[in-house]
Image (cartoon, rainbow, N blue to C red; front, top):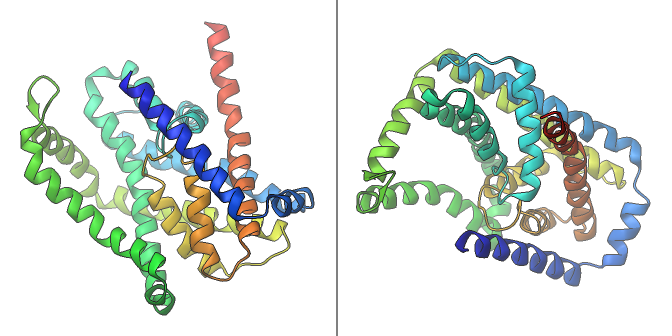
Length: 309
């Protein structure tokens, strides 16, 4: 019942955000923009979706191999694709990771901790590289950030949020008991020791970091391409900076697959750089639709497997 209420809250919150967006931005203008879209520019985001999946699988496979788990790339690709499909119905952009964990855990039950660590690390490298990108462009757009209270607030929370969370866990974690009496800090300590195996493996660390940078660069070019489909060329530096904020904050499970939240944050940060709000909203609606459309291949694969059984 509690989980149902949480899910209901996220759905309502998503609907409320979308409603507010369309109250603030001319809906007719957004519709006209999408009707007049130049579809040839959307080929690139569609291809990037699968290239990004392929590179993510390569990164994940390398991490799993360090833990002694050898799975062929096609199986991991399928897991990743189906996981991206489930992301459409789960809170935040990491909901599908739960599906990947459950599937792999059935096959490698004795390596539960290693599987969880591999999934966390595969995602963590992506977020870490976005943090690096954000840091680089923080200095490039320093004057703009200082002058704008919204950007400044987002950056301050980005810097102070993670250390503050770790301090809270350290202080209060020992008072919570989970998994049959094992303390939260003890559980985290075991997990961190497993994560450390990869972090100390410099070859895998830098390989994963490099692959993540490529994936993030492709994401930036994907958004750039969608902006072009509406007849506007946006500075790649602006897209890189804004996307670093949007994607890092997308980890917050505040709405269903961050529907409404991502679009609202996108309008907030991109409009600071004097980009039309209707074009921003149209761009990220198209980006979401493209992602959902491509992830449907994962849903089809899941339905096909269910029928075979």
